[in-house]
Length: 94
Image (cartoon, rainbow, N blue to C red; front, side, top):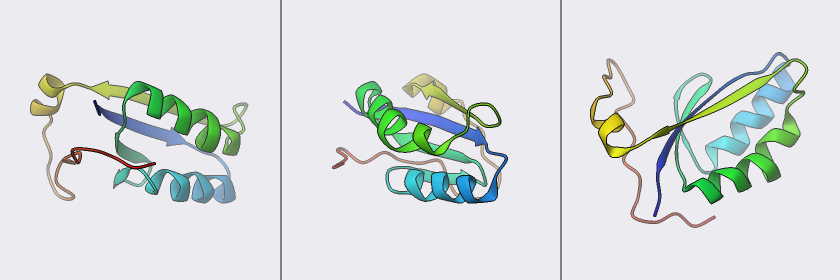
């Protein structure tokens, strides 16, 4: 079962930031410059983090946070502007 994660980052270096964003765009929807909504279960999120996202970061300078959004939390989200809240597909192929 897929869940929705709100993932945000602060990356000091432009090259690392662009590389991370490109990797995240493969499985997540960008909602702001450094904020993504990711329809992944916990194992899928861990795999993305360990295999693709964290190797890009320099944890001495950069940070990344992932917040779970359950159905109740998602219903309480307030959005002004675009894009609209992400609607996860029924399944995701990685």
